[in-house]
Amino acid sequence: MRTIILLISVVVLISCNSSQKKQEEQVKKEPVKVENKLDLEVYDFNGFEKFLNKKDGKIYVINFWATWCAPCVKELPYFEKLKELYKDKGVEILLVSLDFPNQYDSKLKPFIIDKKITSKVIALDDVDMNTWIPKVNENWSGALPATIIYKNDESKFFEQSFTYEILENEVKQFLK
Amino acid sequence: MKTIKILSLLTLVVVISAFTINKSNLTTGYSVGDVAEDFSLMNVDGNMVSLSDYKDAKGFIVTFTCNTCPYAVGYEDRIIALNNKYASKGYPVIAIMPNNTDVKPGDDLAAMKQRALDKGFTFPYLIDKEQKVYPKYGATKTPHIFVIQKTKKGNVVKYIGAIDDNYKDANAVKVKYTENAVDALLAGKEVPVKETRAIGCSIKK
Image 1 (cartoon, rainbow over the protein chains, first blue to last red):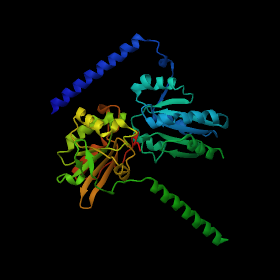
Image 2: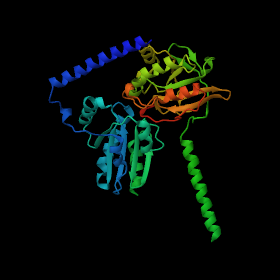
Image 3: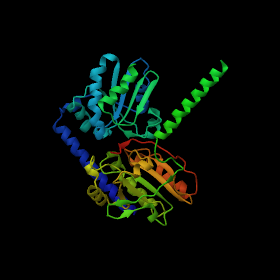
Image 4: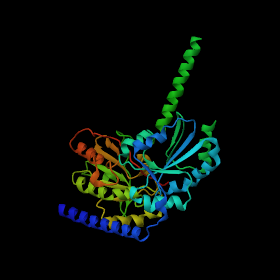
């Protein structure tokens, strides 16, 4: 049994290595890839926590998403629209990507560029999810997408997908 | 004046408790300690599978997973390892694919069959075709684990959550939550950590 596992891991290791090499070769061939120009801020939870605790009277809409999460991708345009229509009313959007770190360059950055996303996108990379998920919200099971809307000490959490109308309506509650 | 104060206080209590009740209603599905209902779901081999089929099992590692979620795929080898380690000890893995396959065609029965074949799944991979089982459990995402112990009361939920604390790298795991839960049950001890959270793909309705 052990030998089999060992064999499998060796095979996996070798295949990982070769694919990594392939990627490196590709990068070398095209050194001026557009996506590499995009700066992505990456945080662990300690670094990220400040975004959940701003008390400057603005309304913060924080959406947790990933490029591999289809319902997340579907609702991104609603956050973009919200940003456009409410930028003069003190509403700030923050898109927090939970993409895998080894796909920041290959998937996340090209996605941000292709979709012309204008909202601020940051990446959260912290494997100790059982520690930080409840700190975002006690009721969050960890499913994506998830969204927090907050203003000073008032906050509402959503483990769900939005339509634009529902999202706008929730933000309006904070504008009252 | 006093009566008004008392009345308003009472109202406040009623209102607060109403909210509390509402809140707990929102989190549907099993909590640790609840008895889980049995089910009858189709396996990738075409047979129907129920927990009651496993006469000799001491319990189950019920795992909601799918083909299309990168987190679930990232954990596949660890799910296979769980079954290899614990099936013979009386805790087999029962994998259930909860997604609506109209939304995720990559999770339909044919694709599940292929995946089970490619990966050499050593456990049943069932489809929750009518999507009636996962809401009973309160599964919200893939992967989502429910460790269940057979007792005189029935199948009691003993652990809900993640497999371990590092989705990225199986070799960098510090705490194996699911293994610790099953080990504790096998040793007749209390499960040390009964609930954990992890990021996953929402179950597609």
